[in-house]
Image 1: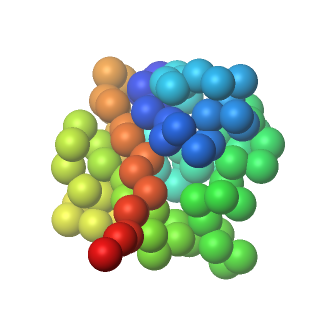
Image 2: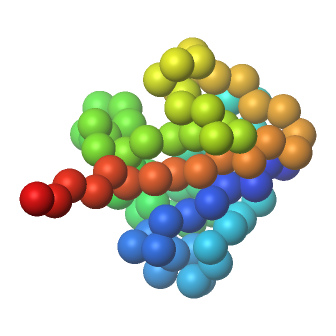
Image 3: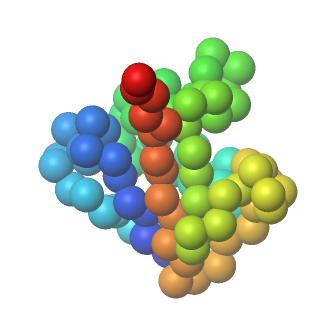
Amino acid sequence: MPVKVRIPTPLQKLTADKPEVEISAATVSQLLENLEKNFPGIRSRICDESGKLRRFVNVYINEEDIRFLAGEASRLKEGDEVSIVPAIAGG
């Protein structure tokens, strides 16, 4: 079941400059795996060495933060929109 994934600008060079891609996945974890299969190198930018999402990367399913759902085990359904949003710090 394909879902739409919004890619942040700094990572679009890994997706051939596409701001959105479609990936088939049942969970966020599987989505991250399939993103890497389709766009090698992207996972290391959003996940740490243990394979978990980096602290400064936020993931939303239909504008809801996965931290308030089931994290990387959050289920996806066809037509969902997933946004990968790197946190921005400043002063």
